[in-house]
Image 1 (tube, rainbow, N blue to C red):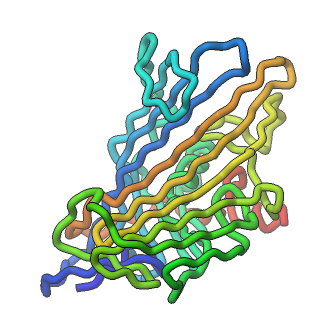
Image 2 (cartoon, helix red, strand yellow):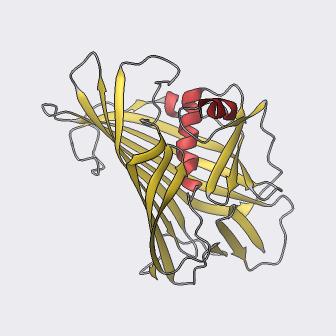
Length: 314
């Protein structure tokens, strides 16, 4: 039995012959880690951590996933470490951040052959929450067509991703797998470009942020809106994507480095964002996915509202 995990990109093959009445259900582990480091003279950092589950089912059209989040937990704390790669222990109280915990409303992700096409969401969704969803589900987007790609390939193309449309260098490497990252018996993942057992493929996306048709100076969970005046100035200086696939694992993530400052203050802060999505399980769905209430199409681009708004801006 074959099931579609990510339309146009990734499938899973089960050796069992039985069919699932309601199709498969995919669970992805979500991790978002943000570290804010003020300019020289400050000796600590502020950390924001979000953990959640993204639950998706493929729709019968074959080009869409119906999804919702579950068990979102977010907290923040001050750490003594200035190294964003350091896990760092809290230097004081750990504060829950419910504003960053994503609600469980159903939404849909539509794909084309290059990756994300658009979303279908509840028309009353808050813009900042929509942007957080875009950032997370953007990890399911390949951003280019890789059908039949070879073992070691490097090429440049315009990548349509949630933070912009930028000239991007893709590096695709296939190599023997030293060890399994996780154990997921019962199925084999099959990307469109093929992958033999015992092999690992790495896809790295290096974005040239100076060559973008649309670029958003966004940081995760920002309450700032492009429809409002703001005294915050931000600039994305680095944005790299990475995907790892084996016969049993799919891991996708993005790393961003953002510099922010306030017009009214002299303090400059560097933000380090890491968004990570990992396929945790594939199980039989217990029922058909619910429909999206008060459904409205939305652009994949952060900072823009509905598709009609995006077209008017263009």
